[in-house]
Image (cartoon, rainbow, N blue to C red; front, side):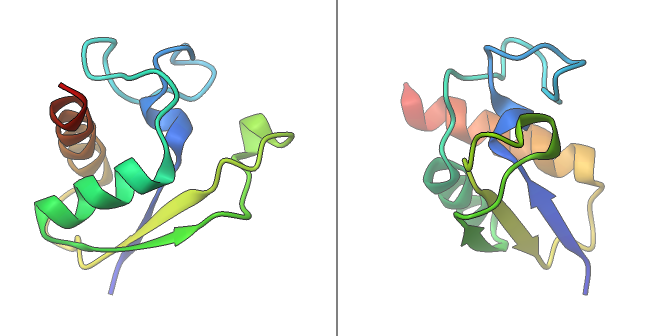
Length: 93
């Protein structure tokens, strides 16, 4: 089974692409949380596990955590991140 990791930095509007953001600015949000990401992953239909004590390598000073996604064998990581970002934006509206 494939495991994908989604870091909050992937969706963070305050970061540039070179700093780790993986979605377009219209799908990015300010300070995304692992709880929001995990809820979005579950809405899509995959299993999500939150690991709060992890730090993204480009933000090694900030323990924002990460979300491990299981069961997303049928899609690419980019498709998964884009779908999660769209759900997070919708949840905030």
